[in-house]
Image (cartoon, rainbow, N blue to C red; front, side, top):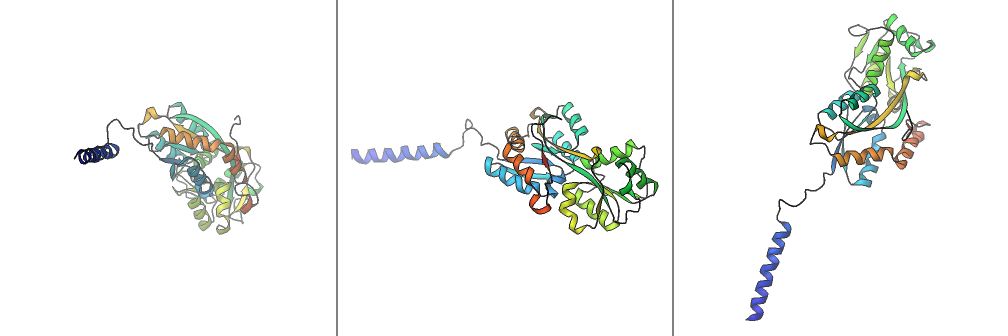
Length: 283
């Protein structure tokens, strides 16, 4: 009888132990959020760079990344609203304003490539012979040659608008000026269909080149430098921000191993890198 009572007590104790193990308690720490939202410019997606980097990051850290590829301006708006955990963007003037307003806590340089002006081989505005990018834009306006703009508040769009402003031309509303409101890949396709000019980052152009029929007509001008930064967001602006996940991704983008991958990306397919690593460099 004593043995039976002891066995019964042991079973009851075991049952309570199981309940204590699996029952939720208010004092138990919540599991770490393992998904992060990356808001990024379309060029990092369209070029294929993120297809190479994100699996590396996920394998190294255990985080899963939800990528939202939009213009840099839209990405920063997402950051302001707390709808992203980390940003990868290329609109320096807007980024500085974003940081000054307290939406970001760190902004680190990651890499660069360049913008180029592309258009139909016939080059109706004769911009290939222009002395500078500004002169090329003047010739497009003076000849009423079709220009396809992203018109989406992206880093590329900001660069384009800055050039128009510098030459004191307001193209808005002109019949030869057509905004798409789309990403870089889509805008290149529209320019190709309509035989128009556009400004693009080199990486996206090379990724789409074989189906476009557009050629590079202006390149190498210092004004066409295209720099990318990774920005960690300020948790004081929104409780939704995954601080640890955002920092993990930012650290990953400037890590030596990642920078080495960036330096080689595109060489096998295009004969040269699409981006140049810059982590740790002074600007």
